[in-house]
Length: 257
Length: 318
Image 1: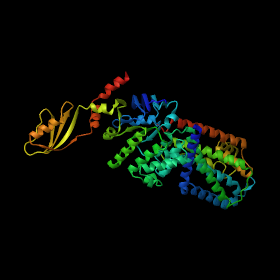
Image 2: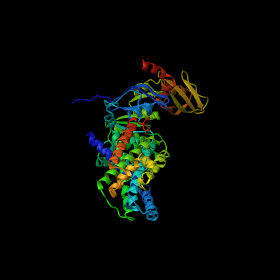
Image 3: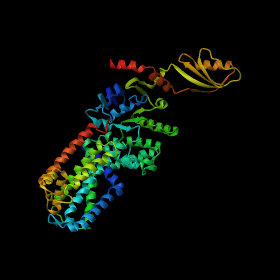
Image 4: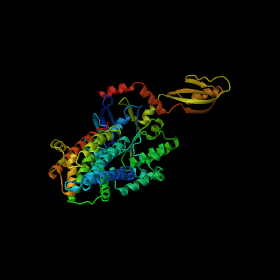
């Protein structure tokens, strides 16, 4: 009875979350499509044609997986951060808090919503990339698992950000000052093997390097890091962030007086 | 057949200290019987909303025990929550969602299937005269409609106990009366109702039992009839037709307000007929009369204003 009730509650939160970003699709789905199209035109077509090959592939083919992953990361994160903070701000998060919804269902519902948006935007970007280059698939399962784990990781990150946020400014600080630099330095546009040894070492502390490279391996069969390391990092982040999110919601940080 | 005489709500020794040290609740004890229509009254900042917050798990308690239909919120929180429907003081729904989505999603959080939730949403939206607005965004509703939407939302999982925190605040009198009828109807179906309100007339008309909370302690907890019986003096206002000299009343405390109006304090031991008799003897006709204020309001002011709270607090602590 309880598990059936929890499943209905989970579906309700997911339904609400997916409906939210679909209702405002002009704000949630169109901007990343335009942004990534510009990346394809500028870095792929205009500059990329002068760069030549990278990792044995033409530059456009090399950056496509990274750009898809970049859009998945930013959209998974921002969906949950803005949705959960908005629910806190309007206090409609109380609708869930007063109901017999276990905390893990709340976390899973919001993370699921973030994953849906991240993956949907990733699919849109993938379709747009077909206008610029052919896409090859080396291992579809690695692509699916990597995108699922990465979107879950950043959806959890967005949730934690929203729990702590006290204003709308607070949910843009992490994406602006942490997420964007890590993404740009995460091997989206280059192979980290091109860097001097010291910066290669520094780059290995950047979790996004592992996500981008695992994803790129799924498409092209090349990676700057081992897949074992990549999936270990992803799994470690998911477990850690999930525990943090659950602890915060259970204690009612930012939610209960 | 076993008759379950369990209380709808049992609160014992409930304390709440907020960050910064403010003690909102100082160890309250409260019992609400099943099927009761219960008023929880008190001045602003007395602890009403904090009490409701603890019951509904929106506020973490510092100490004490809360049981909802026998389910302790410390050990069986989800079971306890499933009995409660909450109508909060502030509008707390997603202003951008349609009424239908708000209601159906809310039912889903309680495990109600969407098909069933749609049927219930239709039922309550029609009963509360919101059906025509079902596809509108909630922000488009008037204040009274938003209040009714929150009542509908609280009923979507068919709770056994409905807690209403100032449900008629800012609502015009006609709508308020229709909401009273609706609440009476719910109560007659067996739903326990706990009401906080600043309209004491509302509490007097609707509720059978009452608790008054002040500065975080319960200063009065009794049934409405017993409480009203404690009223020693009632003040009535008389509109008079005065031909000559101003009226004089022996043995009554009275105040002349203007040329045609007097206020008379009538003690329990006195009879209002004596006022009429004396006025008639002076050739003064009474055109109309009314209570100066609601009876419960007079009691409320006297209880809150006389420092009864400190006495009760001492007793409670012992």
